[in-house]
Image (cartoon, rainbow, N blue to C red; front, side):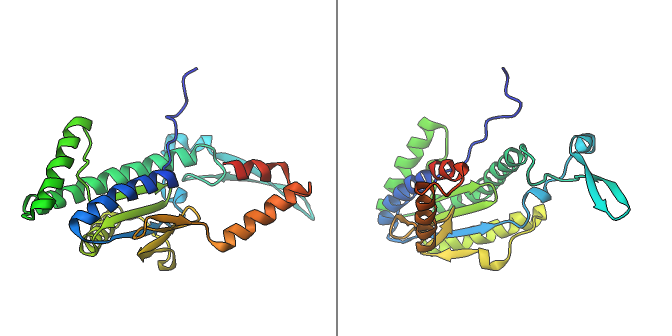
Length: 239
């Protein structure tokens, strides 16, 4: 039958690596390194509020057992909550819209800079990429890539100066929408960033599984092999 919600699409590490390989080619022309920037949101689901007409669909009766017998509390969610099976879908679509808004703004800023470029090799690259854009209907003339996995955003950028401009545009956008960002410790910028549990070395163009995650995976697989782990642990490793 008809789907209740649009299919949820999330970026993968593989897609980020493909984007990096394209940027590495451009970096050779620009003679600038590929760098990265990652950012995160605080309580992302809870920042997306329910329409008043939908609140009655997100309520529950909470039973409290006390000395004087059971007491009931009525809990009403005013925002997307953790554990609600549609929260991820709505949050991901909101993230896609943030990506679209950001790209719209930064592409407009970049267009003037690319138009003013005079270096012959760079002009040739711009011409080829804009011709590709005409065929695909997408902007293929970008010296950056952005992936958003729910509330985890990762930028890969050719050149440090361009990365600084991207951070400024991103800061302005999130402030205008009044989004609450995660603590600074979760924000990274430089030659590598941590995204979806993997350490991505954008300048070198490869991904590394951190030692802590390797050890945790080995321990879990050993538990499954010894029949000590839960069935769900096995399937979690297959995702």
